[in-house]
Length: 109
Length: 120
Image (tube, rainbow over all chains, first blue to last red; front, side, top):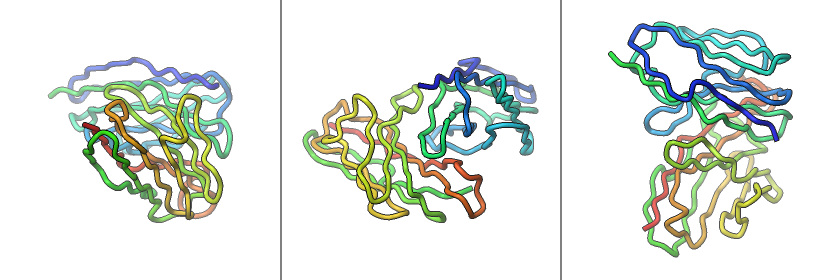
């Protein structure tokens, strides 16, 4: 099955810093989503981005489908950005998402 | 985004009892829902795919007689953990896939808030 690798596994940032999280996947996909899991376990949808670039406030994401990777950019990080960021992919319309192991982000004041 | 609810959010039960978890899509119809489990500090692992009106598809290693799934309507899937044991303690999360139409990207999945099960 499809493999998803995320890097780095852990990241500590000073408040205000920028960061880039990476997601590599092993096969072509038609669904790629980025999530933020908050301390209560809720997965928050950040981006649905099987290809191209999207921006939402301080967050943006780019997926280069032909090279099988996606990047999540966080600018001017805040303590509320802390948590685990997951990349998940799917390769057909009705298949479940395969998750990477996540990047655990800690933003310190 | 779309709203998926789960109930209950937390349950504590004695070993040997059965626990039912409900997953509802509140503002869209979902012919397909997925059930995941997550252990502390780990990623989500798919347990099964729930299809409205048909039998669920289970992942390898997941006991279908222990984790009963029913997808009786386009907005409701249930997971019943039968004869629960302490090793079944985990965080269970459902997701629903947005189908074409509406305000959501086709194929985008939305997740419920999760159910934390503790079996004593």
